[in-house]
Every structure is written in structure tokens, then in C-alpha cells.
Length: 540
Image (cartoon, rainbow, N blue to C red; front, side, top):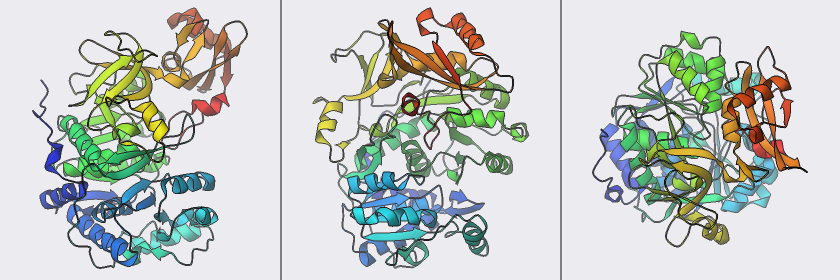
């Protein structure tokens, strides 16, 4: 049976600032975040963030409600800046560190950010767009800023001179992070009303221009409680080492590591570059790990690594997945290798983000589990009518974690949230009688073949079971006879199959109209920076 609280009571905290007070008081001496082999305690993070908050309010004269952008990879500076912004009453805007200059310009301008904390390696791009934004203050961070000497100096020198990571730039009015944390602490943070916006997170942009989802203090606190009701079933408070390979600027990693795991007093081991699989394997071998969260493509990459068998998985209490559909073959291979079942979940940026997750011991493979507490779900047809149990329709969500709306986009907000508070996700699902959710596909990715709905996820899941297929992606292409047809992109293994082999494989498990008409073999698939396959780019 589930050990769930009778009620979550998120209202016990008026704002995230009060949550931070609780975290510091409850977990002060415990290790909070680790990066490059160095850990800071919750008390140290609290002191550093109070100093940075003092710098923001007293030196930069930022006012409550001003937006501050954070453009950092997973470094110790990230939680310090986030917690400082909360204490200083600012609205956080997280920005992908790998954005191009035009993408940076759009997000900074769209959010109206007044300040930005940026890694020095990205300052040349910032310099090229800053005049077209409202940014008045720049704080420059270096990789090793929160590491002890001599490691700090060695890492910063290596980044600049050996790896050539720091291009030439001119931002003469900029401040440096090390100077900022030498400021006097802010003192007691003023509590903001729960309905005020705390965070603007931009949707992934995999289907078009990214929009900023406004998440309130109450949204984030409620979802923290909802997610903790699930994670408490697999790891105990104040005792877990949890690896953070997903970027903290991303909605799920932000909620999990900066709020939920901090609330639990866990030790978050930050992975600055998850694409460096050799370094990630070394980290997994070097540390006693209790929790790991990834996405389908990361689990696949780790399974293919020649040294994955050297990792001791005996201490792992949970492995989580979200962000994209989990391939059943990868989930099975991971459990066979590690003995740890992947708990797949589901969420959206607009829902803070967690909507549903599987429960240990009650995992139903091929589903994303059941709704987290105090969350209502329904599947509807194209006219918004609720569908019967088991029917495929668009998922709608109602709960305390649903965003306030899209920043500066009232029409888009009204299109996505109805007057009764139901948020339309754009995902096709079926919901079983006992509440398990099966994600069929993105509404916008559905292919219509001779009037039949074809969902790319279903095709990819079957094709990925082929012994010589590493991964695949399906899209719809125009077809004179059937309206649309399925085209499949395949990344093959060493003994590459032919197109006819793949089609024959598909006929064994898919209806005839779902079998790809065209197959193209490629070296790799276009992905977002968290590893989501970008079908939009394949269509283009």
C-alpha cells in the first residue's frame, strides 16, 4: 500500500523563502550539493545565497519582482544563485547554457530580464545581444568559483588556456561572482505571497517558439510536496546521494534537485557535462549512489558504454525517467543490468512539472504511473468532451501545480487553460480504470494515414527492439494516396540492417498502415540539449 500523507499542506509555507528557512534549519550540517568532487553543506549554501541576495538587493538595487536570468551549467553556483533570487524576492528565469545568441536574445527580451548570471564561456554571445535586451546587470561566474584552492585556480586556468573555453569578450560593467559573494548578507527574506510568480521556465521549443510558463511559489511548493510523497517511498530523508545529470535549468531537474531533494536533505551530485560519458561512469564508480534520474537517450548511452559493467548498482534505491517516452527495451535492459527498475513518470513545464509517476512495487511497464496526490486527470476529444475509461484522447490536468499562465501571452494562456482550471497538455493518452496513464504521443506528432491515427512513439518502441537498431524516430510525410505516410529515421548498429529488414520487422508487430513507407539510415538524430529527439527538425 502507498504511504501517502492524508494531505500535502503546501500552505504551511507562505513562500519558497520559508521553505529555504526550513531546509537550512533542518539539514544545515548535511552535504547539499557536490561538483568536481567538492561538497557544500546546506548551511554553507544558505550563507552564500544570503550574501548573494544582499548583493542583488543592496549593490545592484534590484526590486521585488524583477527578473534575473541564470545561464549556467550544473555547478555549485546554480543553487546559490537560485536561493539568493528567492530570498531577494526576484523572479528567476533559467536559460539553457548552450543557447545560440539569437535564442538568448529571444528569451532575455521576452522575459524582460534585468540581470543575468552567466558562465564566462558564454559572455561573447551575451555581448552580441545585450543591447537588444533590458539587461542592466551582468554577473560573470567561472567554473571553479566555489571550489577550494588550489583546485579553483587550476580549473579556471585549464578552462581558459588549455581547453580554450573562454572566448574574448568585452563587458566592462560586469561584476564577478566571487566579488558578489563577499557582500554583506541580506538578512531575513521578506515572504512573498504564494500566488506571486517565482519562476519563469521556457517550454522546450521542440514544436515552435518557446513560451515562458509562469510558476508561482504555491505551484512549486505544492509540486515539491507531491513529488516528495513519491520519492519518500524509495529513499529516506537525510541519507541519499542523488546524481543530477539532467541540467538544472530544465524543469524536472530544477524541481527535483533544488527543491524536492533539498527539502528531503539529500546530497545532490551535480554532473556538469553529462555528454562526457567517461567522466560520468567514473563518477558513478567513485561514489555510493542511492538515486539516479535520466531520460531514455542517457540510459541508452550508458548501456552502450564499455565500462558500465564496472559500476556497483547494489545501493541504488531508485532510477527515475521522464522528459520523453521510455523505450521498453531500454528499460528492460537497464533492469537486467542493474537490478534497479526505472520508475517512469510524466510532467510538463506548465505543471511545475510533475503530473504522474510510477510507484515502486506497483510499476506498470509502458505507463507513466498514476497522478501524484491532489491532481485530477481526464482524456477529452477534439471538442473537449470527456472520454470514457481507456479511450485515447488529449490529456487535461487540474491541480495546484498548474501554472498561472504564459508570460506576456494572454491568448496562449486562455487557449491552454479553460475557465475551470483544466490545462490541455497536447499529449494523447489513455487512462486505465485504476488510473494508470499510457502516453500515446504528442498531439502535434500524430500521423494520419488513410484516416487512421498513427503514433510515432508506438513505431519507435517496436523498431528499437530490433537487435541491430540503436534508436529511431518516425515522422509523417505527405502522400498523394494516403494523405500522410510514415517515414522512419534509423541509427543502426555495427551490422546495419537494410530497409527491407526493418519493414519486415515492423510487419511482425505493427498494422500494415503503420509500417514506414520510407526508411532513412542516419549517423545520429537531432536532439535537444536534454536529449529529446527533435521530430520538428526531421520534418524540416
